[in-house]
Amino acid sequence: MHTQDREKRTYPFPEFPNGWYVLANSSDINVGDVKSYHYFGKDIVIYRSSNLAVHIVDAYCPHLGAHLGKGGTVVGNNLRCPFHHWQFDESGKCVDIPYSEPQPKACLKHWAAIERNGQIITYFSTDGSAPHCEVPEVNELQGDKFPGWSQSYFSKFEYTAHVQEVVENIVDLGHFIPIHHVEEVPHIDEMTFSGPRATLRYSTKNKVLGKIFKAMLHFEYYGPTYTVVKVKTMTDIVLIASMAPTANGQLRHRFHFRMKNMIPLLNPILLRIMAKQIEHDFMGDLPIWEHKIYREHPILCKGEGAIMKMRNWFKQFYSSETPPTKNAIPLKEVS
Image (cartoon, rainbow, N blue to C red; front, side, top):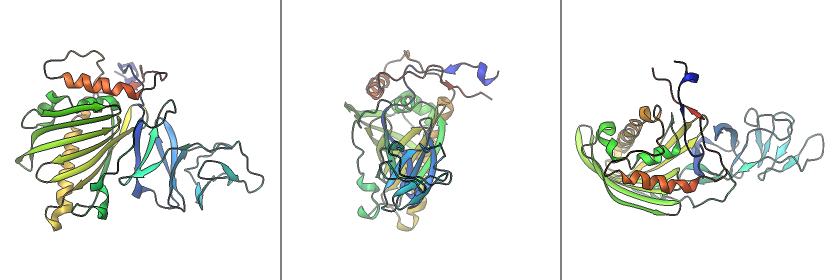
């Protein structure tokens, strides 16, 4: 059956919830770099000016539409278009045209941009609303400012899913044994909500390198797409888990890991092993997400009430006037 003939994945809510989104690592963008990205179904450009500030802008010049990420350059703190060398300052204002006077109407749209925890982050909302909360600075991820912890380990990967399904999945306890092969069903110790913030704590047992370890996990949600996770197992691990939609139902997921030092010479290897284990556990869900549909009114059994609590909390991140993603995201072809 051809892809266009197959059932479409449908959701009764928009594709892009309002929230903080990690678009790149800070180390990806050096001074003078101008790099192209695609998020929220849009082409954008991220550049770093001479004053070390990071800027996120629409990709296309307001003059005649040249792509600023394809030959655009940084001149001091300005971004220069490759086509006619018009320059735009840090507010997006046109400040220089080599052969004429600057055009005040030619304004380049700038997105909110902050750098925190080694990552470049923007706030996206479909209705232009202000951020619903702040992104925290996580002490353990501040490098030399917080001694006794390993260097950072970053990873990213892409898959097909909706942000809400990924968030709901973490409290779907019944899937942990068949999908993640844990030794016992996790037990939720705390699940609380306060506006755009949510806290989740649970414990489980998992097998790493053939040995069974108890793990205690503490999740702090700062909106729907930015989560600080602290794991206590054979050592302490802190990570940022974030996801950002690109287009056509694709999510780009990023992890930023650090681990409390165990054996100095082996710390980089041990961190990589533990990070890969967490990634492996997470990726167990991907084949399910890429082929499932969304049940707006699921038939749940005893012990699954946390799914609906998380779903109800998530509703606040959709703008009321944004249309749902009905018939928007195709299911992957089953081979």
